Length: 552
Image (cartoon, rainbow, N blue to C red):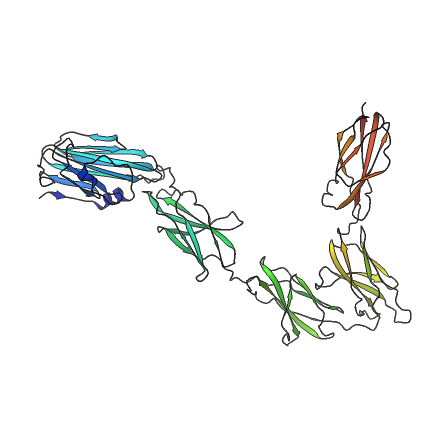
């Protein structure tokens, strides 16, 4: 009986991934369909591979030793031939090694181009190894074998060369990337198509947070899917897969696939909680927690007790408790809450007592007016029959329920105060009278002031001028204006300007535009001077002048 041998290494090298161009076959051969990457094998009763094949079947590897026996019933032990063909996907291609040995003749073709030619009748087995580069994609291998007389054996294998010094070709990017997320398991499932690379070592899965450019490797696997547990923060994460080969080279990443996680992560604990007792209430302030905070819960209770009516909900990072009993110590904690109702741990507690107000009357008729360098506060003089104050304390906050902060002190006979640190936007004020024991009165009624700009100590800087056109007596002088260097963020109301000289006199003019246009009466030397004016009508201390010549 004929004997046949197979080698596991050859099976691995020969069948790990295939597809491609089919060679013409007989009607009998065309009915045979082989598994992917298997060879289609045909037997001929002549050495010319001609005529109708005696048999067509499939072969997972080429490794036969018939010695001096017939390879098949109906075929003589001498003067027969065989052909193997396979079309497969070589992925990114690269360096390969072809190994052929036979007695008698063997020829190896790639896409019908002969690569190995040992076509002769020999008395001993002949061998050849060929290193070659295969282009990426699908290619057809054809191996022809002829046995003339004597012993017959044939063996062929092909495999990628995986040394990093030889293989300079990165794998193809995986295809078919998909990603999904389960709100029940809190896991992302990422999957992709199997790579055709013959030297594939595995895959790496990367993740990044939306809005960032940094990828984190979350898995290295030989499978074509992976289940990851991203942070359950309600944020969007992107996944991509990359193939890597035995030479250590990595493919480019697939398209990023987004998943939106559920938010099961509480905000960070509130820190920096401070408290100030005023006669207007206990004022609290703290550092902002995580970026996803929706609001804060402020818990208050008499020291050693429980909050009787639950927390106050606060949108900002400060709060004044206006109902705390005067003279009673209260303990406060703050918790951050996000839009998914996750609640942070409580802050460290603070304890403060709202002071009992003195009998000194509170200032009356408090009002405020925004000016360029400050916000001016005024109140009515104290009643001469009432206890005289020794000073006044001025408090400010920037939110209707925010924390009050002491911003200044006025003298006993003063009825006004200049807040030179007044912020842009809304601010709220109250004033308390201070008696000779340092105790504050009840707060005045609050006054609110809205500013277009922060209080600014100095006027606008000298503007920057550009001569666009020096003009003629028939065309206008054109000057471009920009805020002074360093003044770009200041809100300006307008510019004042005048042009004078031999060219004529424009007189004092104003413009809200970033340009001046004026037609001179005469030709000759001329000069323009421009001052910037802020939102509250204050002109800069210095203007900018520009001299030029008006032509006819």
